[in-house]
Image (tube, rainbow, N blue to C red):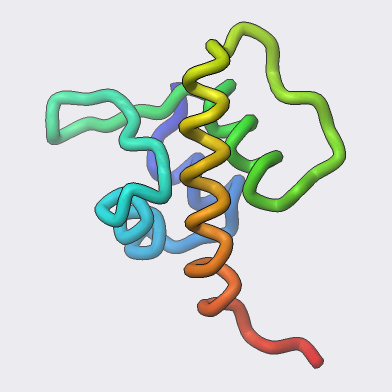
Length: 89
């Protein structure tokens, strides 16, 4: 299970961006009791692949319904993430 710091390192997003995506329904909520939240490594790997359109197979063991939910979240998040990235042109 991954901590918020792990997500920040993997995605290169700040804590505020991750929690904003979660509150908008564009990122997996993770599991926890309110104080400590953890995310499934396989779900985050799949989400990252879908978010960045990485040509890579999704991790094994994720239910089809979960993959579809992650795909919908990643698609919605692309608009938000792309608008916060600096224009490199």
